[in-house]
Length: 394
Image (spheres, rainbow, N blue to C red):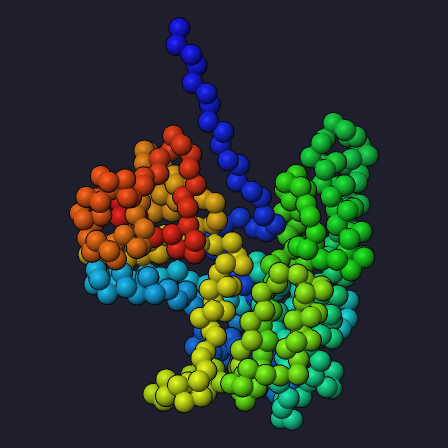
């Protein structure tokens, strides 16, 4: 008898904290009057009120903005289809939180629930001084503001866990080791509450896959990815200087190592939005640039999302998937029948179509092993990087 073929090891998809899916949102969070609504307006080209008083925003405002990608633009120019569908980032403008929000201060319970409906956080840090825009705590101090925000999130998570620990604890007391899922959930919640009481956010701690499975049933506020946005005055942003930048960098290095920090100026972005005809000239004369594109791309990545393209004369479309999605499931985003009857995907990179100009030329290059294929038998990951390339046919 011929020797048995060795079974290939299949790489297991890593687990991440957070909700599974592609209809995910990122919320703009901060204390009142730090520029959240102004940022939302310039980002999404909206015109919601942005006034100089706390709680100007009460109900959350939601919109979506296309993810900028030069590759998508090139593909549209090259194929000239009537239908062009980019990837989108969904953004929510959430009312300002104040100290005591976890106990209901300033309509805090409602605002915290709005954060709970999001999957990642833009943490807005105000560093600009403006006598016409009062700060809820008097003077500007972005480090104090950030401590206020995340302390309120931790307190709300502690309250939530305390209530649920009691419920799950009753199941564990009744079932003992027979219900291993409940026992794991109970022990994980106890661990999370202890860490939160020590001032540590859930997302900053190390968790096993089993613990992540338990935590993902609850979607705690402090488990959400965070991007720090530094809202500067226009002059400081253009000069790339400010008394708070180094202090914030040091603070994040100590309290959230590896965190993404993006300076921008809401005032400058508003100027560019109000005068689009002269925006390019203004940026060139001041040797500066808008940071909105970078913010959008980083927000999309923070949600654990990426996308692939399908292209042709009829349509160029970006299909949003979660990181580590396999080829059959990616095909299912286009149509469920493609996942059920999946055999293989003919995949080529964006660089291939730019170089060879046509699908036929790319296929010809594939005979020289320049264009790999992905099939179900190998269970390969559909490798992407915020837009993997092009899948012309599945």
